[in-house]
Image (cartoon, rainbow, N blue to C red; front, side, top):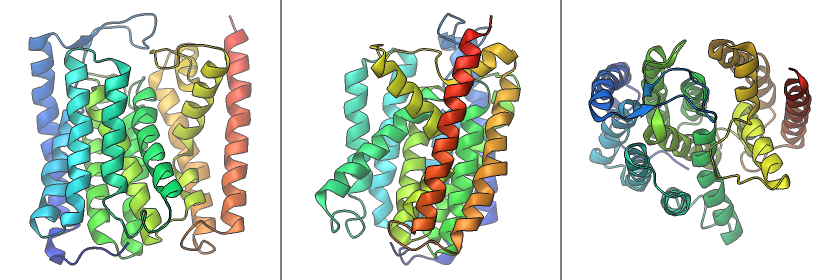
Amino acid sequence: MASPAIDASVVLHPVAIAAAALLSASVIVASISYARRRRLLDAPGARRSHVAPTPRGGGIGPVLAVLALGFAPLVLAGASSFAAAAHAFALVAAIGWLDDHRPIAAMPRLCVHVLAAGLVAFAWPESTVALSWPLVALAVAALAWSINLHNFMDGIDGLLAMQGAFVLAVLAFALVASGDDASAHVAAVAAAALLAFLPFNAPRARVFMGDVGSGAIGLLVGAASLWAYASGALDLPQLLVLSSAFTIDATATLVSRIVRGRRFLESHREHLYQWLARRSRSHARVTLLYLAWNLVLVLPLLALTYRTSHAGTGSVYSWSVAAAVHAFGLALWITGKRKLVRRP
């Protein structure tokens, strides 16, 4: 996908990216006071990993920063192709905001997620509809899964903000290299806004992101990945490697619960990261462990495959690397869960 022709001063300006971090932090501070006044507190429980009542909904900070300083300047500058993605992003954030105030049933939320995924998938018809309807359906399913995947993985301090900032920062660099500065701008603003959220959420959370943030960030990670694929910035296997820290844990846990006949849409504490947090009694250690996966494994492998990748579905070498990463990650997941479950 070619970057829309807009004023270059609008995109990737350091002041705009710094302002996104500042706006995000300012709104987060306000959201903490708001949550305490409205009693929007997550209490400890059998299905939760924290030990003290904690305000939720802090994800509204990054959301507003992305809308105001990521999407809005592009749409106002004439990049109308981002309007649908902005509406989808706001839609997922809105249903999450409502759910943070009063729980909404899973099916209505899922319908909104699928609608938002469809808006993003159809925003760039030259990269999706022109291929085939099965690929369009696959893109919608992947985006909807990304929304829920990131919601599932938002269960301990710092984990989601760290992962989201890492993935979006890498995507921003890749999109710049491919010449898609407009898409890179949105990803970079989002990464900065999430980095601003980290001090409020780690090493011990003063506020949780809530569904308003986790779902919206999940959609944005999926959308930016679609943009990177469409522009040839990264091929499909590279994108799978980039998000592997979350996709392996979330997908393996979901499949495991379905196979065992569990109600997989209900909240639970069966992800590997949750078991690790309980056994180690430290959210920070687990978050650093997932960050280490990104820095020690993901980044070097992306660098190795970057020169050999091709626009489109990817080279045989890239697919081999992606398969090896997921096989290794799945083996770690199975081994880790067995040891953790059996340990007193």
